[in-house]
Length: 359
Image 1 (cartoon, rainbow, N blue to C red):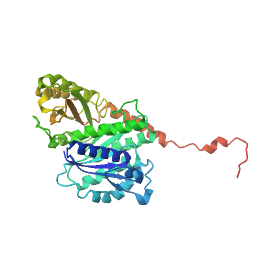
Image 2: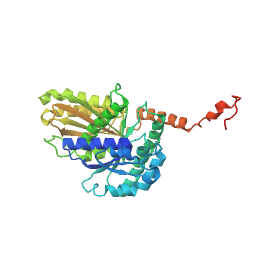
Image 3: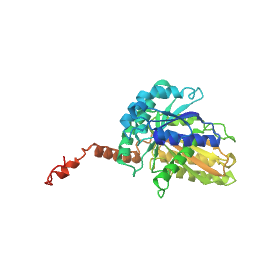
Image 4: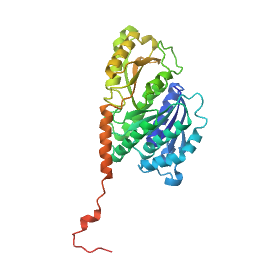
């Protein structure tokens, strides 16, 4: 699926760069262009992709300080500039636009939904958001920002693929190391999804193309991605159970939104050496996925890869009824309520100290 990426904010820019680099290294040619947009000049200077600074007259290149209302306002004012910068990147070959953003920061959480609204007004191809939710240990302002942003972006985008920051990294890692791991895992998993239908080595027995991805995301709302891999035997007949096991692990322990299993639509892609992919295993995995997710039909097919392993990639659409989403929204609501409480005046502590003021 050929797309143009727009990273908004610090996290969005880093993930967009990681996705573009992965696509280039793998030779998929799925990404037709990549642009990072931010209000903080220092964050853009660290990137190798094309960049654009917005809001210079408002925040002088220093960012919005976590204020997502200001981030949304600046994006609204700069939307024409951003869309002009995209001119030449969004061509007739592009089948979708993907806005990438961390939903906890100010520029990303405020700018992503505003940019999605403006892009949908102009282009007739789908506009998706790849949004990253803050982890449980990140500050309350990030939780509150992400809650407000998620409700808005789910309405404005054609579909929102969510990544929970607590999902795709080792709990033993430091915060900085975990972000690097998350970005690398997002690049691999989302990169494989976008590469579906592109010309690669080998011929798939059951072709997956971009229409399968688009139709899986067509109902809109919240979507998630699951991934797992397993060693592949040389004889495809010996890989029936390996394919089913990888699919089970992708859904039950490898999704971007843990415990989000019930879905409206689903897509299953089995990647690997075409000679090692067992058709019986793919069909059995699809039937299991139908039963587990409650989907009436699971789209799917093969994705040829030069690898000695088998990979199962699952895309779920319509997962907003999941307990994981409910849990996050409760956390965001509590953080918003705490942030709305009046701040105590520190001078009140000195009312009865019987000392004279210095001035």
